[in-house]
Image 1 (cartoon, helix red, strand yellow):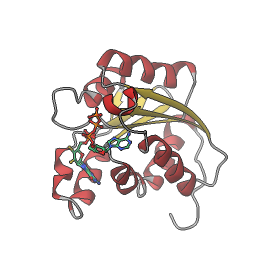
Image 2 (cartoon, helix red, strand yellow; image 1 turned 120 degrees about the vertical axis):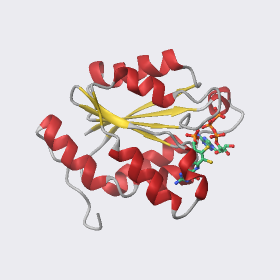
Image 3 (cartoon, protein in one colour; image 1 turned 90 degrees about the vertical axis):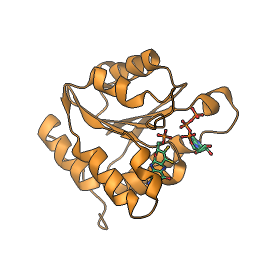
Image 4 (cartoon, helix red, strand yellow; image 1 turned 180 degrees about the horizontal axis):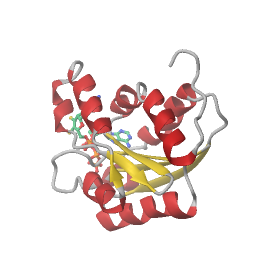
Length: 165
Ligand SMILES: Nc1ncnc2c1ncn2[C@@H]1O[C@H](COP(=O)(O)OP(=O)(O)OP(=O)(O)O)[C@@H](O)[C@H]1O
Ligand SMILES: Nc1nc2c(c(=O)[nH]1)N[C@H]1C(S)=C(S)[C@@H](COP(=O)(O)O)O[C@H]1N2
């Protein structure tokens, strides 16, 4: 299964800190799915046009089944990931953002600051995750069954989940 993962962070992109959230996406995805996974890795600044281009490339050219973004979902002026994502989505799936916020709120009250969304472009499921590495794990770790069901609907392929999912 081909999975694109895009880190959106001005500071990780310029090297002010090392990107830990992209590698964390890979670890969590490997823990969820019992399938061989090929990752396509992207690291970009919070620039709407570049994010749109990357999402189009991962879904249309790379033919990823899943594209996961991390970062840029908050209220700061340069947080534009949901806006870029909506530009490329053909069908929005608001339930992903809703459940990430409500489950995370039980742990961190600041979870409601994430505007993360998700949806489908062609045969690719795109999901926004917040930027912190801990948030990546907190939000992604319970999405396995919904991702598998969605991929069955849009690709006719249901990735196998590991037993604890
Ligand atoms: N990709 C990442 N790798 C490691 N740590 C991160 C990453 N993204 C965010 N963080 C951590 O989470 C904190 C809060 O993230 P914040 O939402 O401010 O970042 P961002 O908007 O994703 O990135 P930036 O502000 O650099 O564009 C950061 O100060 C950093 O410690
Ligand atoms: N599970 C979880 N969700 C979270 C957080 C977190 O630490 N854990 N951080 C919140 C904060 S502080 C912000 S500002 C928003 C947006 O973060 P982003 O701009 O890095 O995407 O995600 C929120 N969602």
